[in-house]
Length: 265
Image 1 (tube, rainbow, N blue to C red):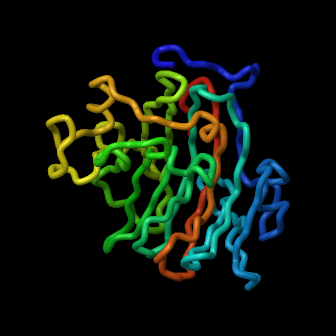
Image 2: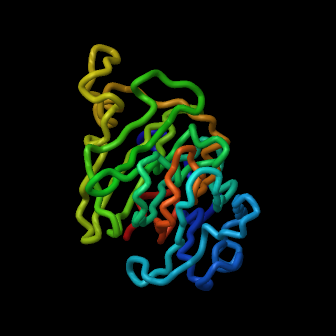
């Protein structure tokens, strides 16, 4: 709750963590980090193409989960269930590097992968000089232009970034999601004030077309979610319709979910 975190019933504030330190390669043991991830799915139309593997070279000497872009209908995901109790505040950190040049928006880090509209942490797409992303919340109803929020920021292909999120339950079914983005040097490059509404400067809502997450929350607003969906956490490749089969990867590393405070680097 705002100003008072609802903590999980555990003495350990780290609810989940994965550094893919178990092994490298494409085995199930490597991809699930020795079973830390309880669910692992690959949907490859019977072709035998493996979309997920673990490679060295992540930030801080970590391994990284490598995810391939093979266009529509080629999907793979890891998902952890029951990470935190329902309607409980929590914090998420992961590192991400994108080399993929597909221009279609892929929702690649979500809560429950089948109910991703409740909260998509990372919907990414390539642009001419790099890539961009936004968060999305429309799972239990929303009003245009408030479903998607993103910074006016182009990130570099081939570079690591750190993404941090605070999911703050203001009541049992409404959240304020606070976001911080850091570059490879540890410098913060985006926060709530940089995450803009859809159709910035064009689409009016409540008399304004320049809402940011910061101003939206300051006005006392929040976003509706299905609490049970937010107990889960998933990442991978959703096989987005119209995605290009670039054969290029993106990477995740250093995942941590906790219930007390922003994870440290």
